[in-house]
Image (tube, rainbow, N blue to C red; front, side, top):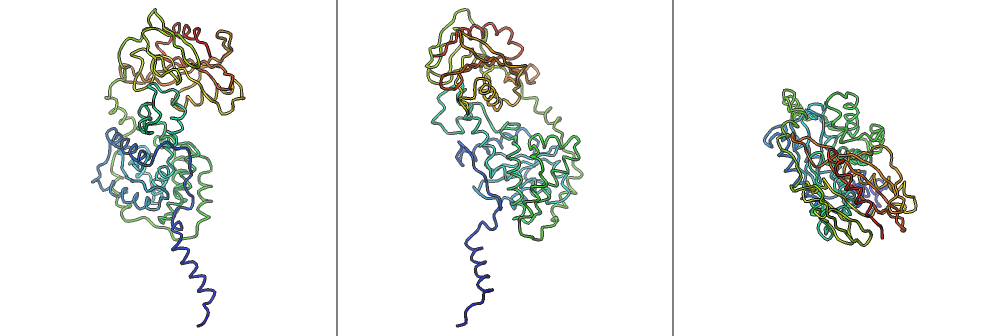
Length: 459
């Protein structure tokens, strides 16, 4: 029997690699990993709940619409090449003019009609969808929520959250993946990860990955009324076209797909459509009413009580309640001071563990402020932090302002005033108290807050 030639052996080896390494067809950049409190089942459930809410709040094209059917077909083709967990992907079209798209945890994906109108070819639209699929694959939403929950759990209003599922904890903390959620606004690092993973998905589905970066660059250059919304949720990591092109150059040369007949048909359909603007949609949503506090009197009584905590002692008005126990973070608030599972009036007292215990009071206070901003992206410092001495202990005093859970009579957002005071502990951690009130009422409550602070003693 004649020995097989070298060429035959190489062909056999190549075939063996194809058969034994299904990753050959997978996206070349693999998903990153990070801290995540959500199981796959909880993540899918969270996404489905958020999707149902989004479909109630946004003007949706029905599933029977040919534009929606096309996006669902294109999305399914791309999702087939998504690596990692096989999420239950679903694809929806929002009748909105601004260029944007967003993905919810576990697979629901929404594309604005304006994005389809702006795409000059099918690969550009495929790039947007592949990018959003990559956010799902990377679990960016639940990873961001997990990080925030880990930071905010000590601030829990109701306490006793540990031991429950992540979804239950999230609900108790008043967090969600709803429209406009902080967790759906991606970081630059998350954007770059989604770009590179999406480039691989596009390539495996037969599309030129460079078209994704080209589309993003085009809408950024055009600017105008439609582009800013996209970049508020998808910040440009910088050099996007260059690094996507470099990634594409590492992939074997191939003949890329041209526009399908369905794409051309859909482009003809959407050209004559007039989607709603974000302003028009917001006007429709304004009928949801106001978010007043839960009711009850927020005025402090003249009589006071004292809380003996394992870490501190503090006095507070007798008609205010303490949430938490002697070993946890506590919230002290009037009966009407809690709105939408958030503190609208009252004080939160807790201990913060900084990354570097020896960094000093000033550095660790600013690290704490950065952590607090994650739960309230609108939070910003007013002026400079100042030294303060309470019962002989030197601390830091910082005034902040952000968005209050309380709405005005017209249903518009109001400002919240937060007064943060921090003290160093012997182990390098911070004991801190945050006094909270709508900005309009802070002046009236300040004497009460000052009296509470004067009564505070660390143990």
